[in-house]
Amino acid sequence: MVIILRKAAVAVIVVLLVVVAFLKMNPPLAHGSVGTTNNNQYILLSVGNKHTWGSIHIKEVRINGKSEPSRFEVQVSDTNKGLLMADLSASSKAQIPSEREAAIRLLPNSFPKMDETGPQDTEHTIYGLSLSEDTPIERIEVSYTYLGLTFEETIQI
Image (cartoon, helix red, strand yellow):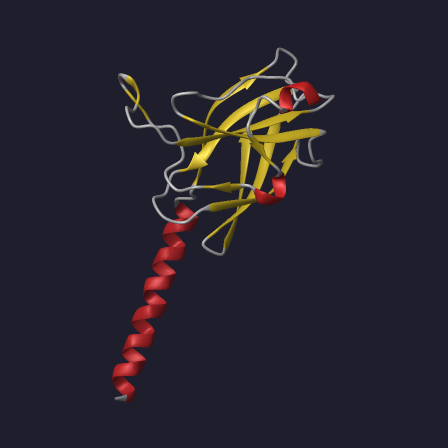
């Protein structure tokens, strides 16, 4: 009986190590199209969860390797409506469905998939990071958790 339990425990540990290794080599956060102003002071970055199970919880968004952006919102939309390239002023926030940074959760299969003919026919939720700063934004660092594991992704603009 003890031998069977040891073999089962070893098998569980091996499976967990394989899953963790797979996730580290294939992180769930996907990013796509980038909209930007001429001076790179406003960025709209489409993001999503490319895995089919588990949500991504964004913990922190930083720009240029050091600071939090002056203005930051997450747009929540669907593939039919798309994302809006809009100013992050108080008047535009009312028009853009958004979430606050503390509650950012990207659902599974939430990245817009493209094929040779364009977007897929099925409608699903998509997300966009809207960031604004007084200086040009050169890169965005996103820290997030997925299935209890912490990931960091740097996106060059």
